[in-house]
Length: 94
Image (cartoon, rainbow, N blue to C red; front, side, top):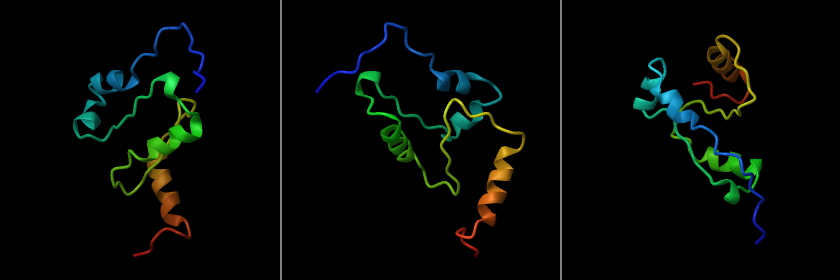
């Protein structure tokens, strides 16, 4: 199979290591709430496959969301997300 052309640029910084070393956020890593999958750029098969593999990191949480680096979060986005999900017609009304 043809190999993807790889840039000579150095690898990106590991954002997970930076996030987990921050005293404000390290607790999420300590509780195993952050999961990551690392793929070498020569083995990448595109964004659709990447999202599929990322979905396999789901650990049984009630809510699951994927975001990319271009997303800017609004204040209280998580509470708004849960409220909107619960209001959806397909959300289980127990």
